[in-house]
Image 1 (cartoon, rainbow, N blue to C red):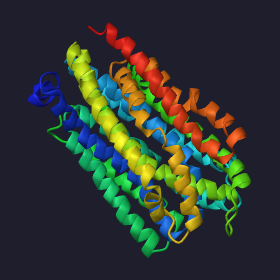
Image 2: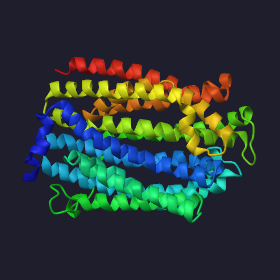
Image 3: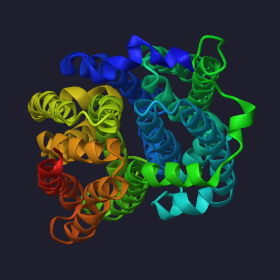
Image 4: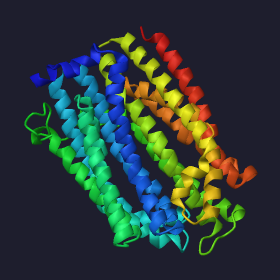
Length: 461
């Protein structure tokens, strides 16, 4: 444990804030971009090798995929928040127990996700709006993905701890290896072997297996200061409770995102059939779902790196908050706001200008789908520049252990505001109303987040 008294960890409380934020956020940005690639690469190659039907099938699986991610985030982010605070307090034995309990929980939750997924998969896909054409495609893809549920939870969940131990580049490298593996296997399985949608699923499963093996290997190396140890893996109720409480806010965001995507898929099917002309074997609803799948792929390439930048500041905020260096907490917030806000404003301007350029690679030789996807993306991303304000505010409450306030802010964007708008607006604007709900919710969540953060900072002396 004495190795933790190194300059690497002590720098949290003494080094330049801009330097620290960039040091930890740049690898986190790349890691989250890698996570986005797991979804985007599948849809890109499926669009090239299978077509619009394959994109619709993968999009219908997205709510289930998000639920799996939520289970990983609940333990990974919750355990890591507590872990970072204990490191700041120099309580290294407790930090080891927290890490190992988190590892055990990730395995148990993966088993639960696999079991429930196998039982309820097809009824859920039908509820999400799967048609006779898209149900077999979506089922084939999801059944293979569920077989690798344990890798889908361990890889992203445990990578948080590697960053908090002062090894952001190590965490980034392991995810990059998984992403590159996914890209190579997607090309081989879909474009060369012509395995179709099953090839995309197998590429994802194998790449996550590789990433999980590399991440686990880090925690059993001789020079790793806090390792995976059998004697600390036995679950302790007090720590499990705290992990779940602290991990609830970001996981609620993902669970709500899963629920939102389920409602969105149903709305796209319903109002797409009313507003979009059928093309070939695809109904108007299937076309609308394909357009959203393309739009969501591009948006995730932008939002997930932003999330990585914001989450990269969490160990800095947690350590300095635990060490009561409040001026450094405030400086970290200011720096994050400036860079995140600038990035999203520039991104918003580019998307509004060149939407067709971004969607075209996903729908080669399908001008109707390109046109529909570009129209949808301009509406869906209309309030991009507001997202950082709500996201950074929620991350502050998460990093300082104020779990329920963070949960409320996360819920604002994906439940409290979004779902009502998603249910109401289509009655007036049909398919356009489905895509309008997100930018309106983003704006409302940003205003609420800033108000809560301003109130909290007045008390932080």
